[in-house]
Length: 208
Ligand SMILES: C[S@@+](CC[C@H](N)C(=O)[O-])C[C@H]1O[C@@H](n2cnc3c(N)ncnc32)[C@H](O)[C@@H]1O
Image 1 (spheres, rainbow, N blue to C red):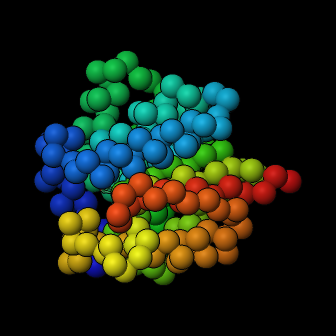
Image 2 (image 1 turned 90 degrees about the horizontal axis):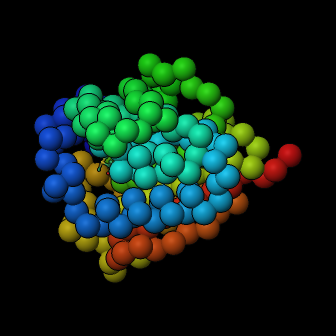
């Protein structure tokens, strides 16, 4: 991680009031793809977890298609904004709380989950931390559970661009690294490129 958890949280606290109006189209598009993929295989009974939920783009997007969503973030400002949006929309099936990739259960009593989603948050971790986080997610999921991850991803070095990330604070992984790491954690994996340097990795654990 290029910045501490607290420094990252402070940065997002500062952006929280304007985040929704200023977020780049690439995060909007991957959030849409993560939401669509998550909902493509749900029956309404699922418990879901969104890690790095921010102002709730994906958590609120999937809420109507699952039973419950637990939305975690390290930024109180982003979580406050997400709670306000849930209230405004009359959504009461999403609970919000402090939690990180390293310690998802920070302040939340985590249930077993059928689906984990995350959009544009994991690139704050270095590759070793990403591997730990993917292992942790695999451990939280029930048999047959899915992890749908949208993020800044290096698909090829020719399209690596600082328009997509800030090298001072961000650490995007290559798609090969993510696929290898998902597979090592037991997932069967598919990938989708959403833009020059953005995409979705979806992993599914085996059924018993
Ligand atoms: C670019 S925003 C994306 C928010 C939301 N997922 C979306 O699609 O709009 C990244 C979010 O990840 C959170 N974040 C960064 N590092 C994190 C970590 N280690 N654990 C949990 N959340 C983290 C930030 O606080 C921020 O809210």
